Image 1 (cartoon, rainbow, N blue to C red):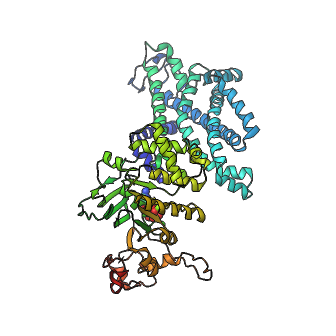
Image 2 (image 1 turned 90 degrees about the vertical axis):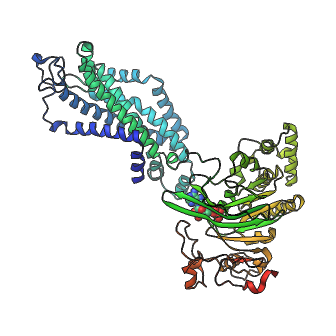
Image 3 (image 1 turned 120 degrees about the horizontal axis):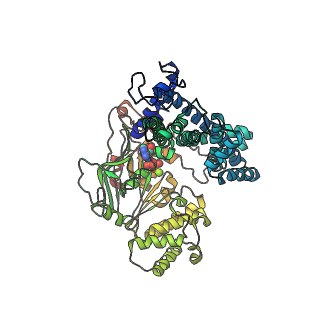
Length: 628
Ligand code: ADP
Ligand code: MG
């Protein structure tokens, strides 16, 4: 609620509209208490007094009645009628829409065709017909305006309800045995309520105008009582000779409707969850870079990360997702990056090519060299020419990365043609070859399949083919097998391994599973809370983990044929990266932690082939030296 108000006030126009409306509504509320002249007492001696006449601030009308008094009483009436009509229309319309949308089928058909028939009439004609049938009068005008707006609400809310009624949480409520009306009350209504509020706030001004229109025609409020519309109607004959009698109610209608519409727009923007989450503020094409100092290049492998630092700046909070990470990948090498969910693996991978969404992501330090050239802060055009060409990605969920409406072959062809000037036919041929090379059977036919027609394993092969499309030097694979079952995972891993050997690919393989690292990677880096805590050759790390965290991770992997061994999970949770502890981030969960671990930052000890960030490592690596 607070957030809603803050967003609303931040929108200047909405705030102006809100203030205008507030003043008008307050005036209308206190009207009976003000020392005003009676609004309906005629005094023909004082006809058409100009504004600022003594005793009549806004002058008088054709019957000598005080305009200020009539204006305030009329405003009161117009607001009340417009508001009541909006409430009635919204309640009835939303009820109809929810029932039609929730039950669907024949109920939906019958109700909505009825609504369609109402909608088929121009609404002013319909309103006139209703008033003609019921007889003129403010109450009947209210009914007419409410009635002609019911279809608008019914259609709107039905559409939203249909979308919600088939969602999993509604199914779950049905499975739990909840009755229809409880589901509507608990599951559906809270979800459509914001839409109803938005619809009301954007139509209430319109309804006030419609009521005023009916009154203007003499079908609404009956003399001597006047609302804003009938005041205008009565002043019409004196429009030229005494314009103030028309201008006064006219300006009030303008102020009310403008105030309501500005406020309504603001309410809509503040309530729409997509606008609120910033989904419509598009991220920059590359991650924002804000580095004070740039470290010296190391230039050892195809890909070198040097003290890379990526943060998320959300309001005042800073999430240190990647905290001075250094990695090196040699040509043709497979480096495993392992860690629990949330340890910063994905953000590291995305930072390399500037793919972290900005805002809120910012690369605040370090560098990422591809063949000795810093990718961080590289001009966008150059970065784009490397993306997908020299450095390619494979993501966890291929269904989310493949376009659902294009055949997979066409998507591969597009990936090739973005970076190479080749004809359509040739690119298609290459696409089919690629599918073949990732061992998709019957590749010519499968290239014509849509993503949803393929199984999960096949889709991930397409993802790999896409990554291979331009024969990259490096593939960054972010948990590519996590969504697959074990047999398919094994096939994909052996496929990646073969491709690496055949093509001399370097692979950065991100996973949370030490079993996978053992199968595929020569070296492994263990990440925890945005930092590397241990690094070394896979075999050596697996045989003799030095960091307590690594040991616990390895203990989580089941071994075949060793059913008796107890599997251990790591107690506790990783620390929130916007509030890291002073010393070792793992200390709160570590059974060996001493006071020293909690006091000061622990550095990465990089003596020898292995590195570990621990004061009391499990293995004495200095003895082991570089032989591991
Ligand atoms: P994983 O190792 O599971 O791939 P990620 O790299 O996705 O983890 O996330 C690393 C950390 O960055 C997490 O602690 C997460 O909370 C944080 N993070 C990721 N995206 C955002 C964001 N948009 N705003 C704030 N924090 C984020
Ligand atoms: Mg991840």
